[in-house]
Length: 257
Image (cartoon, rainbow, N blue to C red; front, top):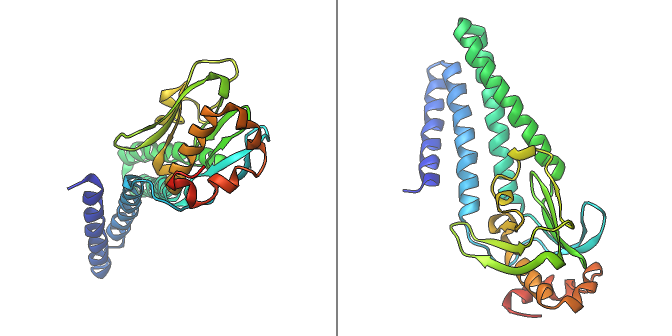
């Protein structure tokens, strides 16, 4: 049984336990079990969301902009994985704060210490959530001069002249990899510091986008990246709506150009 399935089963058990606790009048236990069910339920939802392989369809590509306002062909993150990820963190932080208050009120010195640690952790997670919300919605933008990736915790731009290969990596979690040499033309912004982008950012100077973030846009994004990497004379059209006629519909996923 997968970890996601285990979390789903445990979530159901916690919900049933919370119902029994309410029936017996033990509201404190019911609250703790309900909080645990919410946290594990969102974790299971996120696990299920990222376990699915890219599908056709999904959000339509559009003419977006980089952090400097440069227009380009843009592919937006899917809403489901973002919701489950941020929801999991939010519910976890709120639950930690609630437990911290309960321990501080009735747990003596030990309760104050453990409650304080939980509260500090909740505040840290809350700050992390705020950073992610400020960067949403995540997106990948192809411009005439380079490729821009706005993730949930960091921003990265790599110029075309530094790119030497575009590949679709078939790993446990498929991803698009834009292989690039270190260059003075790259830009990296990490508002969450080293703690941000622990997955994709670890591949720097490569630009990496996990397929579960783009979902239905993954194939189209890869095809567009590969097309403009191999055809530099066509990159000027990326600042207009022209590419939307090719990569803005499901026909592009069938090999259309």
